[in-house]
Image (tube, rainbow over all chains, first blue to last red; front, side, top):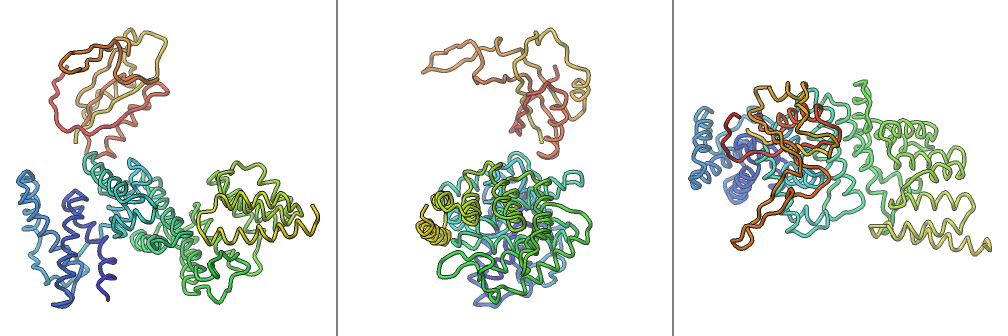
Length: 402
Length: 114
């Protein structure tokens, strides 16, 4: 395996173990970074160790002790750590080869990073840094904020975890549903940020996190459903853009869809359904699946959006229901639902409304709605798509003489 | 870990000093993980002291000017933030509607029983 791939694969696991051991994410991060740097220098020369994770953890742990010893102020902590190491079987660098003995503590870490006592934007950034292994630079770039801002945000979050005593632990049973929902929100937010962008592959990061979660919590239907949802969306990635322009689902080249990802997504969805407990990600994954069939079963899609709207109370879900209703009962029925929604700030609301107005034979209003959508569009492929729609609407308006 | 819970309460019409601590609240305050607490007189009783280039400036009233006022300070012992939030949540249920509790980890200190 290429060194980069090993690093990406191991960073979260190594950091999680160290954070648990040191009780401090910042210390753990410094030590892990040092160990990875040493590995980058030695492995190409001496060959990759039999157990890369074990090697990295042992090395990082030794570095952390060195650093703590240098900082005399932390004498008490050093003793604790040294004891811990003496109690553990001696494992000199390069001689750990039983991967099964290394526990996976990434769940503990992700629940700390997504603790509701941290601001949501800090949760997202910290999760990408600690579990995803993205650099501060990359995270700053992905969220279009200056490096300094992102660096401060990450440092502040790490300090709050340490100083306020946010536990590096999986929450107890009675808190788990709420806290898990918070973790899934962060992962899905990362995925959606990556969907339109393409600056840093955040969608791949989110899927990577989703896979890790599904491996660690194989019995949680919402965890499986979120991964299914992301895979079913991601499977269409190659078909979603053509000549730098967004392509509507019905116009997409199905040969470009990744059937392997679709199969994996569907299998996960079936496993989630088998758990007999529903939740918002399960419904969304089921909808994403229905959208892949031709012709689409709009009645079932509308019914699922209705269920989802009841669960979440989200106007965006209502908007999507309006699209399905328009397919069943005509554009006016869809428009009637849209009129009740307060989504003026949302770019897809205006493009959706424009499309229904166009189909309802109201090109003037459609033109205005496309204009508004274009004003709010955030990426170039979306802008190009909307410019084309705008030109079409203008033509039909001229042809219609209104 | 030790935490300080700062309880901010909305203003009230009745005289706070004349009212005893409600029984249900007293029960929570009597728990062993509550290491100390102080119920504060209302805002009007506050005096704020500032150092203006060596000159002590006094102002009548609290430092923070807000709709709510600092009504109480509760010191607790908890294993971690989740434990502290659980105790704060219990207390919040026994306070008047509109009350907010700020949870702050304690760096160090000395507390004597009142």
